Image (cartoon, rainbow, N blue to C red; front, side, top):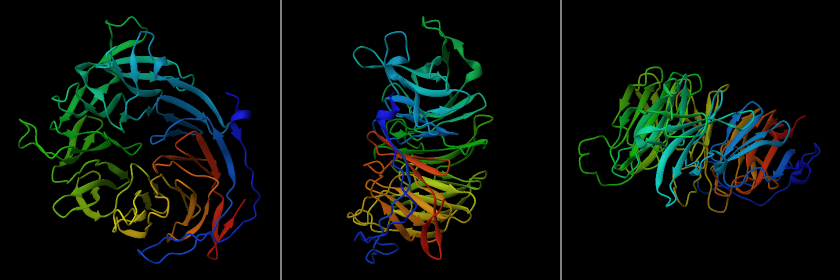
Length: 450
């Protein structure tokens, strides 16, 4: 890759340019708007050709980020360059029709990526788990998953030698479920002629009814010995033989033993239910109660499963939240507008100790909706949107400025990364942006620092 041709550097001086842009959007009501100032951030990176397509599962490790779509890309934030790219077609020496599916990747001693393979007629053939060398991008292991259960979850967890995930059966009559494979139990794949080919059996933790999904898999806070999962109905009908089985619920999995630590089948998980955030004390999980026709976040104590409260009309788009450990706050974006959900704010700030709402900000369709992962630094909340990078006072949600020269994904979802006091995010097409987080609020005014 020729980084000189593909990368455009923008170095901006430290002068603050403020002008009224004539844009109005409410802060805590549906009617009272205010002007938002145009600012000039210090753009440290604007590079095309890094990746094509929306990035909703960016993974970061030190100064490297790993981007997954139809390929896996390792990008060096310190050098502003692609280290390697591994495409689906490069994973097998034999003739395989393969794709990375919907699942996330796991970063451990190596990268683990779930792969779906198909025959020449594009019928599902075999699920695989491919281990990739983080330094070179080379394939270390090709693990064929037995029982025709393939990893079909956005999030999964590695704990010691075990990999936990949500899986899907080969046919629509097979039940989905949650399970794990143990890397210490791998056996040589005698049906393969490729090197480093193994098989692995799935240890099932729990199966769920046929018309339900385990799409969002298992989530865990790094370092925890518990993982959390939800399942929810995809259809209003109940499959024959599944009468009486719980159609929705939330559970904690003991990652050491692979057993269920606690479970709440009264949890009202609707379509797309997900673990929204995990802190040192609580699990925040999306729920939908059809009886009262509300959506929100159920807050559980992590180790006991005791429900603390429900915050109706509060949820995050995908995993677009950030836990500010220092100040014990959670910032999350919803990707909604008041025309669609009148009672749902576009941004929420929650007290991570109590679950209470500290502040919220609403938007209407005249503004780009916010569904990307925010970041916080020195009391400033940085929020990428489809048209701007927006800055807010993290303490009260006051809008401080927006820069139209940098923007996030057009569909308003995607991850961000922080390195060297800079925020990095993708526009969902072909450009990776990096912006210095060097702003402060001094005497109520936005000031750019060093």
